Length: 163
Image (cartoon, rainbow, N blue to C red; front, side, top):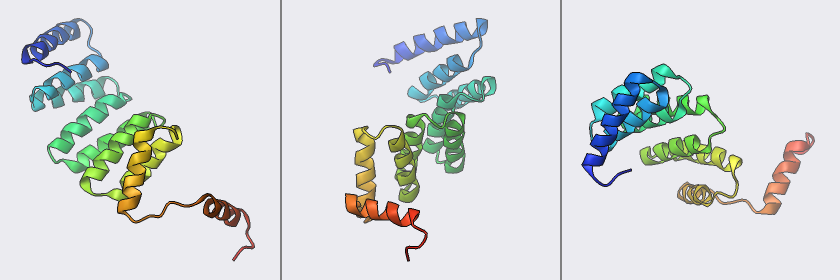
């Protein structure tokens, strides 16, 4: 976000003042992000928790808390938070992509591929997702299907008599 520490400190101060008068989920999430950026991880967690407490549907707060948990190697908590974000808005492509990157970094390539493909269904022209899918399929040695193979697969699925 910012280049200088004082910019974060000023932002944190301003957000705290605003949140006294008007406590809200997005404000606490932003405060958590500012703390996260300057390495005040305990304060970041506290604010992400408050954001979620105020709005259990705040998917971005779940994503941010997941990132923090992943950094702390609390992988089960991170995975749960990514899932909560997706549950809050399953049509948000960026939530699927965030969890896919998490799985990829952990080496869980099948799960990463699944999430990247879900994101691709939402926008089939988004090049970074297509590149990630191709990279993972190559690593997993999954050969991309030609159009004829796809057509045969569709026909097989629709024809109950095909053996």
